[in-house]
Picture 1 (cartoon, rainbow, N blue to C red):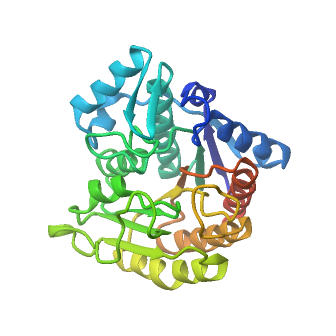
Picture 2 (cartoon, one colour; picture 1 turned 180 degrees about the vertical axis):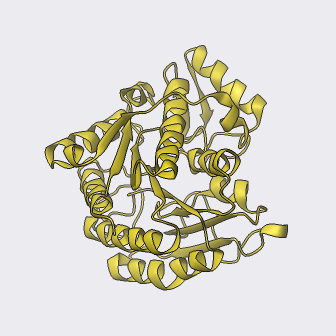
Length: 313
């Protein structure tokens, strides 16, 4: 197995201000842990390149993107009640997207077996034409479109185990029968979307699978739902490539939710997912850091996730 690890120090320049949950220290904690536990040496590192605007425009409104760019150029702004940007946010965002695209390219080419992109800001709440929930650009949707347009993949699946439902990812894919979106998340919780009866629209009916879970769910019930309800739906979709919105904010120590998972369940989830990818789509799996706001818990979960990626199937 060759696991790619993509990151960039530029992501630390996305300044969300004092007291904000999505802070640069998150990425520092992740990278320091991967170094300390030896996983940095077991992966192939890549500094995230800057994405060009064209692939981002395949998923987002051009005027919205220009508004964000100008806001960052002017020194920053409050794009949404939860989502500030600073002078460094535009480059951080484009490097996070660029890092995910580069990881997808290398997995496609067979240079890497799989990859983890450790960067920020996160993306799964960003809608087609607005920032939301700490997110400016929906990186996984941009990557899904890139895989289809650049590499010819017919069916791409986005899985999301962040504790918050990825409203942007769902809304931007739900009418497209060539894209699958599946989410396990706490409900009720921000952003209020992700009910079980949200299953896609029009030609995309059935390509959205939401599995809302109550507070206090715990490891075993979460893993059972993943194995018995989400993976069979992904198998029926028959994807060529898997993208994972890897949020770790369902951990019991996280301040923003109450699913009460442990780091070990992320190891077990990753073990199941890499085995599934090996069996169903040539092992092609790339994950992107989304949420996770307790620094020690986040580092524990990422260590478990990346460690299992390096073992693979």
